[in-house]
Image 1 (cartoon, rainbow, N blue to C red):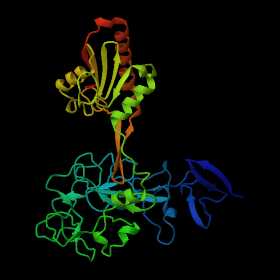
Image 2: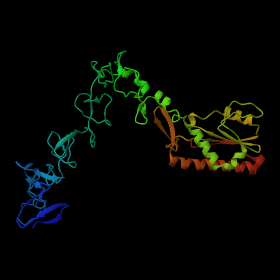
Image 3: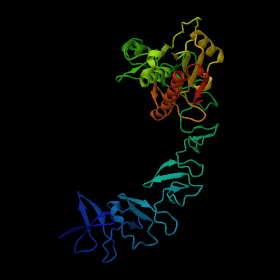
Image 4: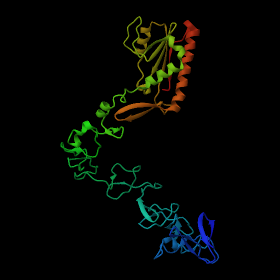
Length: 390
């Protein structure tokens, strides 16, 4: 009777006779060590393959009874070549030729070939400690990966422009669809034959496929150019909401008590003096003008003092408190409040939740303190400018 036991994490079978091979699902699986009375799984051998049957049957000895001549090991049901270093039990994955010789721990600088299950899978980058696939060089032999490529390097196995001495990849060609020239050497009659084209019914009326619009994205399983997308899906093609609207709407949501004092929102102030300058949001609290400006891109967008003075004079208020808020990258906050997303020719903003939850409460706190100062201090309010996240 055959009994089953578990050993070394593998399935092992034994019976009264020794050693024994048993067939599972029509093929040999594992066999025990050839040493008498040893029931361990045989995973080492001095032969890479058995001449007539499966390579798994070539295994002869276990880890305990391994010989110095055993250069092959069973790994994941496949025979692997061991590292040529003495007493190293790792299988070889590196070599300086097309025969695996060394493991990762004993890899040398001259090893440029990487193996997996005895087959060469890639030529690795020649830079030390880099195992990325080498695809770039200044000739047809790959030497460096994309990360470590030089300015003079190009894709070694890629197609080349037909112009003599040009190493750029071709994207342009005639109506036959074959790319033969790069952008620098293209002819007037050439088309970009590598780019995807619009698949809408309107663009299909153009017989020459290379005269159709470029596909800007996939919408409802269709490759559409920006013109067809805007024409077919009018409701989905809405105007982009900018960062300023996001911030000002959040202020209104969190500070409903400010609403009765609100003077204008992104409109010209109609006061004692007519002004064409449009503040982002202002409140008139007594004789004080509380003013918020959302400055996208920080200092690049910050307005000059003449505009602030013009807004102040147009309001007719005696005092003026201006709070400038930067929602983008700054010196001390490298992450912005908004992430840019693009699709089908349209661009919109998505909130960066972590940064948004950090900056907005600070802005709300300054607004509440300024509002409290306007109510309590009256004619003793100090005019000034508060800059946040610049």
